[in-house]
Length: 196
Image (cartoon, rainbow, N blue to C red; front, side, top):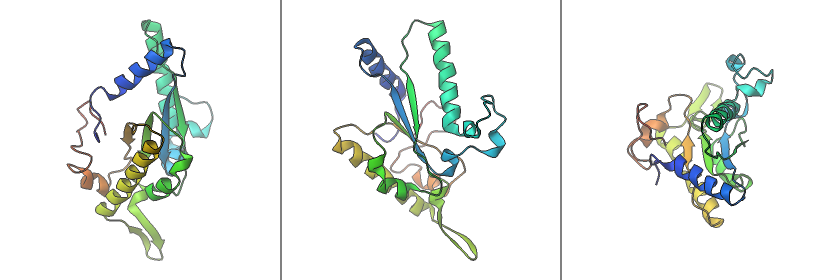
């Protein structure tokens, strides 16, 4: 399915807990692919609550890691439920887009969850003397569709199901409008627990 069901992450965590009891590798691997917004930290985010002095701590991948660690610590302190380790691998590279990522997909490895952040870079075609040339929303959607198809094949070749994929749009993008109600299904509003 293209839209997560309400229990997608819980089912993944439950599978990992079952493996924990069997002493099998239980880490949930989260892979991040994206452009410079994923590869580098934002300058305005340096005064965040991580505040280790490392400028990369402003990356949302590092912020996610920090918050997951806090959440895991809270779960372990308040319950006796085992919680799998969550490993975040940031494969993001500035000045890349969905097409570049799709062509380099063999270098990605395998993740239990993928976070895609190319909404900004997929909107640009090239820089000209008159400024930036933009892709149409339909072209942006085609780039994403190509990437999704390559992900599907990459995992199928390894005999694995396609993992849950979280699409991160840091800006309002035209492709987001083109996706509504189409291949990815209904895009939920911010008041629901469903996510794409």
